Image (tube, rainbow, N blue to C red; front, side, top):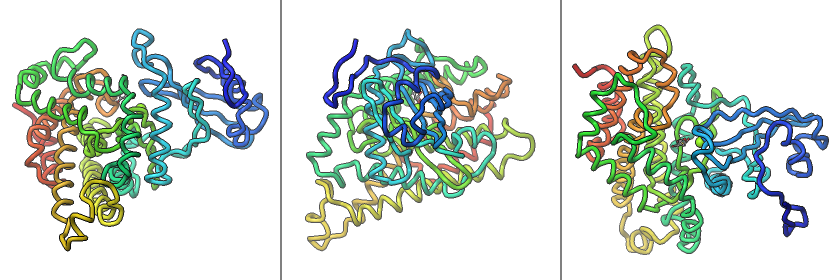
Length: 426
Ligand code: SR1
Ligand code: MG
């Protein structure tokens, strides 16, 4: 069945693409043909999606290459027993365009969006690789922490009531409020499932004693629920929503952020906390990935965490001085009265840091106990040695979550990471 669209072209019912059907589907799209070449018979298509949710195609023609990302009506990782709305492509498209405006050049350029087909055609990043794989392989990227901290600060600040006009902020919050299904995944898989024997969970059986201890820790579960309350209730800014090291692509000297389909209005500390968490997991898993002394590379990973927070706070502070044009902490209450707003800034940054730590600890737990584990640990074949690193991760995560109000800054956080990397429970 076809519907006629307002642009005069027929709108087709959604159809999941494959290597054969993709060229015909996009042959009439000028944004694609101008980049690949007009004859779709000359295009080469490769499906390369290795994420949990979507199809991802690399399409190459005589003139160039693009990425085509299409949502499936279900969770790819699980299959069609878990339906998932196609509208996540709409949220990804809207998040990408906002991120591009707030931190120009950091996200892939969007060439074409087809809402009915849940499909985005975007810039092919080359020779970029997924950051998680690069960390497992021991590769460095210069400027990584600076770029990520700046991205988090610019998107956090410029998407908030510190900067936006309140009507625009409210309208945008309403738009993203409909991303119910993807928030539901995070609310369950990230915040809740790790802390009880949920149906989709899985964990390494060698971890049974520590898992039982974590699930019996009422203070820990309470802390996780306090963070969930912030996730669900504090619509401070447009978050990326899934900013782990699989959502970052790098070369040796360039860093780009991809995949914001989990975009939602949430706490400013959410993205940066998830990100730091994934660096800590990369750090803890290093000894399993190569022979020899891992400490130099591990210290480089920790220096990236330090850079992320320094860059975040520097950029956030600059924006606080120069772009505070929203309803929060207006100049009319501070500078115009001859009063400094620096104390207020310091208090805001401290609150973001503490929230980030809470989200960090929970992300460490869910990647070991819930449905979607990460390759940092999963690629360690021997279950017993994997358990050693996973246990360090679980214990460090609990320490960070429970002490989020007193771990004063990155130095204390990194010392805790070094400590848990050294010692195993007897
Ligand atoms: C069912 S989706 C599981 C995970 O994959 C995504 O990348 C998110 O991290 C989500 O939590
Ligand atoms: Mg993703």
